[in-house]
Image (tube, rainbow, N blue to C red; front, side, top):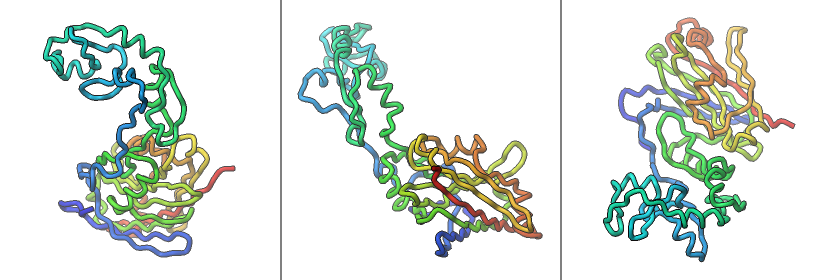
Length: 308
Protein backbone atom coordinates (compact mmCIF):
# COMPACT_ATOMS: atom_id res chain seq x y z
CA UNK A 1 0.00 0.00 0.00
CA UNK A 2 1.41 3.38 -0.98
CA UNK A 3 2.10 5.80 1.88
CA UNK A 4 -0.55 8.49 2.45
CA UNK A 5 -0.08 11.82 0.76
CA UNK A 6 -0.05 15.22 2.39
CA UNK A 7 1.89 16.53 5.35
CA UNK A 8 2.04 13.20 7.14
CA UNK A 9 4.28 12.96 10.15
CA UNK A 10 6.42 9.99 11.05
CA UNK A 11 6.20 7.82 14.07
CA UNK A 12 8.61 5.19 15.27
CA UNK A 13 7.21 2.25 17.13
CA UNK A 14 9.40 -0.27 18.88
CA UNK A 15 7.71 -3.54 19.74
CA UNK A 16 9.10 -6.20 22.04
CA UNK A 17 7.21 -9.50 22.08
CA UNK A 18 8.45 -12.80 23.47
CA UNK A 19 12.04 -11.54 23.65
CA UNK A 20 12.29 -10.22 20.08
CA UNK A 21 12.97 -6.58 19.15
CA UNK A 22 11.10 -4.83 16.36
CA UNK A 23 11.32 -1.29 15.06
CA UNK A 24 8.74 0.01 12.61
CA UNK A 25 8.36 3.41 10.98
CA UNK A 26 4.77 4.50 10.40
CA UNK A 27 2.87 7.41 8.94
CA UNK A 28 -0.36 8.93 10.11
CA UNK A 29 -3.42 7.48 8.39
CA UNK A 30 -5.97 10.12 7.54
CA UNK A 31 -9.66 9.30 7.93
CA UNK A 32 -10.37 9.97 4.25
CA UNK A 33 -7.72 7.62 2.88
CA UNK A 34 -8.78 5.06 0.34
CA UNK A 35 -8.23 1.39 1.18
CA UNK A 36 -5.32 -0.31 -0.50
CA UNK A 37 -7.55 -2.58 -2.52
CA UNK A 38 -11.28 -2.23 -2.12
CA UNK A 39 -12.28 -5.65 -3.35
CA UNK A 40 -9.56 -7.89 -1.96
CA UNK A 41 -10.79 -10.87 -0.05
CA UNK A 42 -14.43 -9.90 -0.35
CA UNK A 43 -17.02 -12.51 0.42
CA UNK A 44 -19.42 -12.85 -2.46
CA UNK A 45 -23.13 -13.51 -2.53
CA UNK A 46 -24.21 -16.82 -1.00
CA UNK A 47 -27.43 -17.77 -2.70
CA UNK A 48 -29.64 -20.82 -2.38
CA UNK A 49 -28.58 -23.73 -4.56
CA UNK A 50 -31.48 -26.02 -5.41
CA UNK A 51 -33.01 -27.73 -8.39
CA UNK A 52 -36.42 -26.57 -7.22
CA UNK A 53 -37.69 -23.87 -9.58
CA UNK A 54 -39.61 -22.21 -6.75
CA UNK A 55 -36.38 -20.72 -5.45
CA UNK A 56 -35.70 -19.15 -8.83
CA UNK A 57 -39.17 -17.62 -8.82
CA UNK A 58 -38.35 -15.95 -5.52
CA UNK A 59 -35.30 -14.20 -6.95
CA UNK A 60 -35.90 -10.58 -7.88
CA UNK A 61 -35.42 -10.02 -11.62
CA UNK A 62 -33.53 -6.78 -10.96
CA UNK A 63 -31.21 -7.34 -7.97
CA UNK A 64 -31.37 -11.20 -8.00
CA UNK A 65 -31.76 -11.24 -4.19
CA UNK A 66 -34.49 -13.33 -2.59
CA UNK A 67 -37.75 -11.43 -2.27
CA UNK A 68 -39.76 -10.86 0.90
CA UNK A 69 -43.24 -9.31 1.30
CA UNK A 70 -44.41 -7.15 -0.23
CA UNK A 71 -43.61 -8.85 -3.55
CA UNK A 72 -44.94 -6.88 -6.52
CA UNK A 73 -45.87 -7.97 -10.03
CA UNK A 74 -46.75 -6.23 -13.27
CA UNK A 75 -49.98 -7.03 -15.24
CA UNK A 76 -48.00 -9.67 -17.17
CA UNK A 77 -46.88 -11.47 -14.01
CA UNK A 78 -43.24 -10.34 -13.82
CA UNK A 79 -42.22 -10.03 -10.17
CA UNK A 80 -39.72 -7.86 -8.31
CA UNK A 81 -38.97 -6.79 -4.75
CA UNK A 82 -40.24 -3.63 -3.10
CA UNK A 83 -36.80 -1.96 -3.12
CA UNK A 84 -36.33 -2.46 -6.85
CA UNK A 85 -39.88 -1.28 -7.57
CA UNK A 86 -38.75 2.17 -6.46
CA UNK A 87 -35.48 1.95 -8.38
CA UNK A 88 -37.18 1.20 -11.73
CA UNK A 89 -39.61 4.10 -11.25
CA UNK A 90 -42.70 1.88 -11.21
CA UNK A 91 -42.01 0.43 -14.68
CA UNK A 92 -41.57 -3.29 -15.25
CA UNK A 93 -37.97 -3.84 -16.47
CA UNK A 94 -39.07 -6.90 -18.50
CA UNK A 95 -42.14 -5.74 -20.46
CA UNK A 96 -42.07 -1.98 -19.69
CA UNK A 97 -45.68 -2.01 -18.41
CA UNK A 98 -46.58 0.20 -15.46
CA UNK A 99 -46.26 -1.80 -12.26
CA UNK A 100 -48.91 -0.20 -10.10
CA UNK A 101 -49.37 -1.78 -6.66
CA UNK A 102 -50.28 -5.36 -7.55
CA UNK A 103 -49.08 -7.80 -4.88
CA UNK A 104 -48.12 -11.35 -5.85
CA UNK A 105 -49.92 -12.94 -2.90
CA UNK A 106 -49.63 -16.47 -4.32
CA UNK A 107 -45.82 -16.30 -4.37
CA UNK A 108 -45.74 -14.80 -0.87
CA UNK A 109 -47.91 -17.70 0.34
CA UNK A 110 -45.70 -20.30 -1.34
CA UNK A 111 -42.64 -18.81 0.35
CA UNK A 112 -44.22 -19.43 3.77
CA UNK A 113 -44.03 -23.20 3.19
CA UNK A 114 -40.33 -23.27 2.27
CA UNK A 115 -37.37 -24.14 4.46
CA UNK A 116 -34.04 -22.75 3.29
CA UNK A 117 -30.37 -22.78 4.37
CA UNK A 118 -28.50 -19.76 5.68
CA UNK A 119 -26.64 -17.73 3.06
CA UNK A 120 -23.46 -18.33 5.09
CA UNK A 121 -23.72 -22.09 4.63
CA UNK A 122 -20.35 -22.22 2.86
CA UNK A 123 -18.76 -20.46 5.87
CA UNK A 124 -20.00 -23.07 8.34
CA UNK A 125 -23.66 -22.42 9.17
CA UNK A 126 -25.63 -25.59 8.39
CA UNK A 127 -28.97 -24.66 9.99
CA UNK A 128 -32.25 -24.69 8.03
CA UNK A 129 -34.89 -22.00 8.54
CA UNK A 130 -38.44 -21.18 7.50
CA UNK A 131 -38.18 -18.80 4.57
CA UNK A 132 -39.39 -15.73 6.46
CA UNK A 133 -37.07 -16.42 9.44
CA UNK A 134 -33.95 -16.69 7.30
CA UNK A 135 -33.31 -12.96 6.94
CA UNK A 136 -33.52 -12.25 10.67
CA UNK A 137 -31.13 -15.11 11.42
CA UNK A 138 -28.57 -13.92 8.87
CA UNK A 139 -28.38 -10.49 10.49
CA UNK A 140 -26.95 -12.15 13.61
CA UNK A 141 -25.45 -15.36 12.24
CA UNK A 142 -22.11 -16.03 13.93
CA UNK A 143 -20.71 -17.19 10.58
CA UNK A 144 -21.53 -13.94 8.77
CA UNK A 145 -18.66 -12.00 7.23
CA UNK A 146 -16.56 -9.58 9.27
CA UNK A 147 -15.68 -6.06 8.17
CA UNK A 148 -12.03 -5.14 7.78
CA UNK A 149 -10.87 -3.92 11.23
CA UNK A 150 -8.22 -1.55 9.86
CA UNK A 151 -8.57 1.83 11.55
CA UNK A 152 -8.15 5.19 9.86
CA UNK A 153 -9.66 4.43 6.46
CA UNK A 154 -13.00 3.33 5.11
CA UNK A 155 -12.04 -0.12 3.87
CA UNK A 156 -14.90 -2.07 2.27
CA UNK A 157 -13.26 -5.51 2.38
CA UNK A 158 -15.22 -8.22 4.20
CA UNK A 159 -14.50 -11.87 4.83
CA UNK A 160 -13.79 -14.59 7.34
CA UNK A 161 -11.01 -14.13 9.90
CA UNK A 162 -8.23 -15.75 7.87
CA UNK A 163 -9.16 -13.69 4.81
CA UNK A 164 -8.95 -10.49 6.87
CA UNK A 165 -5.66 -11.49 8.52
CA UNK A 166 -4.10 -11.99 5.07
CA UNK A 167 -5.67 -8.73 3.87
CA UNK A 168 -4.30 -6.73 6.83
CA UNK A 169 -0.83 -8.13 6.25
CA UNK A 170 -0.70 -7.85 2.46
CA UNK A 171 -2.75 -4.72 1.72
CA UNK A 172 -2.52 -2.56 4.86
CA UNK A 173 1.01 -3.71 5.79
CA UNK A 174 0.00 -4.24 9.41
CA UNK A 175 2.69 -5.86 11.57
CA UNK A 176 1.97 -9.39 12.76
CA UNK A 177 3.55 -10.66 15.97
CA UNK A 178 3.31 -13.90 17.92
CA UNK A 179 2.97 -13.69 21.68
CA UNK A 180 0.64 -12.61 24.47
CA UNK A 181 2.79 -9.79 25.89
CA UNK A 182 3.83 -6.59 24.14
CA UNK A 183 5.89 -3.47 24.69
CA UNK A 184 5.32 -0.50 22.37
CA UNK A 185 7.38 2.66 22.53
CA UNK A 186 5.40 5.30 20.72
CA UNK A 187 7.47 8.26 19.49
CA UNK A 188 6.16 11.34 17.70
CA UNK A 189 7.50 14.84 17.21
CA UNK A 190 5.33 17.96 17.58
CA UNK A 191 2.56 16.22 19.57
CA UNK A 192 0.69 19.51 20.02
CA UNK A 193 -0.18 19.54 16.31
CA UNK A 194 -2.20 16.32 16.46
CA UNK A 195 -5.88 16.64 17.28
CA UNK A 196 -7.48 13.59 15.65
CA UNK A 197 -5.57 10.58 14.39
CA UNK A 198 -5.96 6.82 14.28
CA UNK A 199 -3.34 4.09 14.13
CA UNK A 200 -3.54 0.34 14.06
CA UNK A 201 -0.21 -0.68 15.48
CA UNK A 202 -0.15 -4.45 15.16
CA UNK A 203 -2.00 -7.76 15.21
CA UNK A 204 -1.04 -10.34 17.84
CA UNK A 205 -1.35 -14.08 17.33
CA UNK A 206 -1.84 -15.94 20.60
CA UNK A 207 -4.01 -18.75 21.94
CA UNK A 208 -4.76 -19.62 18.33
CA UNK A 209 -6.60 -16.31 17.79
CA UNK A 210 -5.80 -12.77 16.62
CA UNK A 211 -6.04 -9.46 18.51
CA UNK A 212 -5.77 -5.92 17.09
CA UNK A 213 -4.03 -3.24 19.15
CA UNK A 214 -5.23 0.30 18.39
CA UNK A 215 -3.90 3.69 19.40
CA UNK A 216 -5.87 6.93 18.87
CA UNK A 217 -5.47 10.65 19.46
CA UNK A 218 -8.65 12.71 19.77
CA UNK A 219 -10.48 15.36 21.76
CA UNK A 220 -12.46 14.09 24.76
CA UNK A 221 -14.63 17.11 25.39
CA UNK A 222 -12.08 19.93 25.55
CA UNK A 223 -9.20 17.68 26.59
CA UNK A 224 -6.79 16.17 24.02
CA UNK A 225 -6.18 12.53 24.89
CA UNK A 226 -4.51 9.37 23.64
CA UNK A 227 -6.27 6.01 23.90
CA UNK A 228 -5.05 2.43 23.52
CA UNK A 229 -7.40 -0.55 23.30
CA UNK A 230 -7.59 -4.12 22.05
CA UNK A 231 -10.10 -5.72 19.66
CA UNK A 232 -10.67 -9.44 19.19
CA UNK A 233 -10.89 -10.92 15.69
CA UNK A 234 -13.98 -13.03 16.33
CA UNK A 235 -17.49 -12.67 17.69
CA UNK A 236 -18.60 -11.16 20.98
CA UNK A 237 -19.14 -14.46 22.79
CA UNK A 238 -15.61 -15.65 22.08
CA UNK A 239 -14.13 -12.26 23.02
CA UNK A 240 -15.41 -12.69 26.57
CA UNK A 241 -13.13 -15.70 27.01
CA UNK A 242 -10.12 -13.35 27.05
CA UNK A 243 -8.87 -10.42 29.10
CA UNK A 244 -6.04 -7.94 28.65
CA UNK A 245 -4.16 -5.27 30.55
CA UNK A 246 -2.40 -2.10 29.42
CA UNK A 247 0.06 0.04 31.34
CA UNK A 248 1.87 3.32 30.70
CA UNK A 249 4.08 5.29 33.04
CA UNK A 250 7.38 6.87 34.03
CA UNK A 251 8.97 8.73 36.95
CA UNK A 252 7.53 6.28 39.51
CA UNK A 253 3.98 6.89 38.31
CA UNK A 254 1.77 4.79 36.05
CA UNK A 255 -1.72 4.36 34.60
CA UNK A 256 -3.16 0.87 34.19
CA UNK A 257 -6.18 -0.60 32.45
CA UNK A 258 -7.72 -4.06 32.50
CA UNK A 259 -10.68 -5.19 30.45
CA UNK A 260 -12.18 -7.58 27.92
CA UNK A 261 -11.27 -7.07 24.25
CA UNK A 262 -14.15 -5.88 22.11
CA UNK A 263 -15.12 -7.88 19.04
CA UNK A 264 -14.36 -6.47 15.59
CA UNK A 265 -18.13 -6.78 15.02
CA UNK A 266 -18.05 -3.33 16.62
CA UNK A 267 -16.20 -0.58 14.79
CA UNK A 268 -13.09 0.95 16.28
CA UNK A 269 -14.95 4.27 16.42
CA UNK A 270 -17.71 2.75 18.56
CA UNK A 271 -15.13 1.31 20.94
CA UNK A 272 -13.30 4.62 21.10
CA UNK A 273 -16.47 6.61 21.77
CA UNK A 274 -17.40 4.21 24.59
CA UNK A 275 -13.99 5.01 26.18
CA UNK A 276 -13.43 1.27 26.73
CA UNK A 277 -9.63 1.34 26.96
CA UNK A 278 -6.59 3.05 28.45
CA UNK A 279 -7.12 6.82 28.19
CA UNK A 280 -4.10 9.08 28.68
CA UNK A 281 -4.59 12.89 28.80
CA UNK A 282 -2.01 14.56 26.57
CA UNK A 283 -0.46 16.53 29.43
CA UNK A 284 0.03 13.27 31.32
CA UNK A 285 1.46 11.58 28.21
CA UNK A 286 3.96 14.40 27.78
CA UNK A 287 4.88 14.22 31.47
CA UNK A 288 5.65 10.52 31.01
CA UNK A 289 7.71 11.48 27.95
CA UNK A 290 10.12 13.82 29.74
CA UNK A 291 10.51 17.38 30.90
CA UNK A 292 10.77 19.20 27.57
CA UNK A 293 7.23 18.15 26.41
CA UNK A 294 8.31 18.71 22.80
CA UNK A 295 8.30 15.06 21.78
CA UNK A 296 5.99 12.22 22.70
CA UNK A 297 7.84 9.15 23.96
CA UNK A 298 5.17 6.89 25.35
CA UNK A 299 5.83 3.26 26.27
CA UNK A 300 2.68 1.12 26.37
CA UNK A 301 3.05 -2.40 27.74
CA UNK A 302 0.39 -5.06 27.87
CA UNK A 303 -0.61 -8.66 28.30
CA UNK A 304 -3.39 -10.90 26.95
CA UNK A 305 -4.64 -13.96 28.81
CA UNK A 306 -7.38 -16.54 28.50
CA UNK A 307 -9.97 -16.78 31.24
CA UNK A 308 -10.56 -20.21 32.75
